[in-house]
Amino acid sequence: MGDSKALIACALAAALALGCQAGRALTGHAQRMLRSPGEKLAALPERVAEQYDCERSPRPFFKLERNEVVPERVAAGAAINHRFVYALCAARPTDVVRGALETRIVHEGGTVVRDRDPAYALKPGRWIVDATVEIPEAARAGVYAIEVSFQSRAVRFREERTFAVVGAKGR
Image 1 (cartoon, one colour):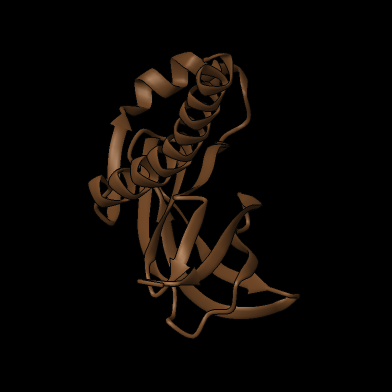
Image 2: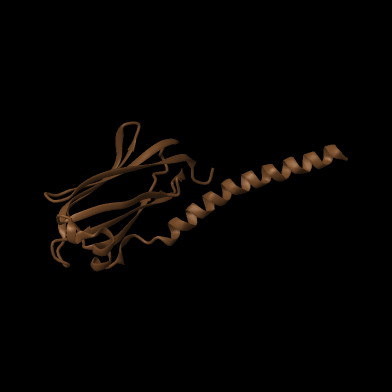
């Protein structure tokens, strides 16, 4: 009787562990599906200026608040969401900062995908920028990085986040 209780407890623990992994994968997939590509204003310039005390900072003031990939593990042939969130206090409330925005996916030191917008406009306030990135069916399993960088005379940043390709979709 004691052995059967131990077996049941082990089976439940294993099922729970597998369920948690599957749950995280489903949560990541659902999160990606809910994020439509594009830019969304999250806070007006005045709110960002208050939060970062921009009156006392040289302008433009820029802060990359988040850079993330969802899900962190993906099958080849599936898609990820790349999101970055930034805050900008410009010299005037409607000014933008134009520069080159580049996104690269890197694997084993080489660039797999590259997208560049030479005249991207950072806008005042807090902005959420989402992109859906399709992972090619032929992608090999392994660790990849998505790098996002921006360069202008006034603002520069570079940030990366890793994710894993774990196998072909449907396998």
